[in-house]
Length: 329
Image (cartoon, rainbow, N blue to C red; front, side):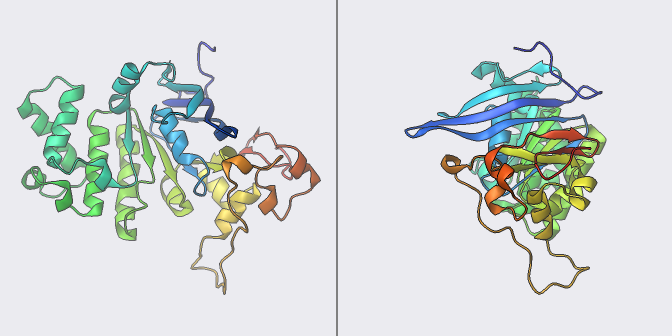
């Protein structure tokens, strides 16, 4: 067991090393997340993108100790230089919320319908800080105003169902930030929202990272959201990282065929097309991940080596890529 986390030049807010999630079944052990490693610096937004079933959400859940049994988590998670994956349930519960916040896809299910949004914020604040009810209310109002809830004092005692989807998501963000965590795991935070509200939430996340120095892990299937908000991006396929790098490099110069396929499938207003590009086939089931490169059955460039051997994730100046057809450097 290592004593200190390997790190980039600046100590990262979050460092994940060799993270795997395995699921014991009657037919054997299935690997849902396979040897995932990355860093997120203070004030940085790291996007994690891939199709449904790629392992994105399970990666986020494993980091904050929410991978449900019988799932077993392996690897290391370091928060501000302190290893947290070895903590007991009580200790990780204290870390969750106070040091790592979470924003989930459906804000309505993340809020308790029986309590007003003000009561929920006050409870969060008083759980993590020694505050009087009056001080907690004042701070809760300040957080609501900070995330853009108009008329916060008037709406403080209203219930979740009295807010629109976009307003509920802002409230969830306020709850995630109220304990002033250094890291936030945002799992598909804009998926359930219309395009105009998505833009507002994206702008809010960017402002939080810039002004408050929050490190954000943004999990999404939408490359458009990644392009708009993230600083760096990790592309996952079948539980593994297949490419990572700066957003501009990955979007404009994708090196892995899967990333190139994701980019080609996005409509462009600058290019006339009669049909959208698509990646043939589907993500493999956990009990049917191919030998070699997991993407090779769907890849038009695959050869015999791709079908026989799993490519390593190789680092270069442009980032990381796991593909036999891409030369390092």
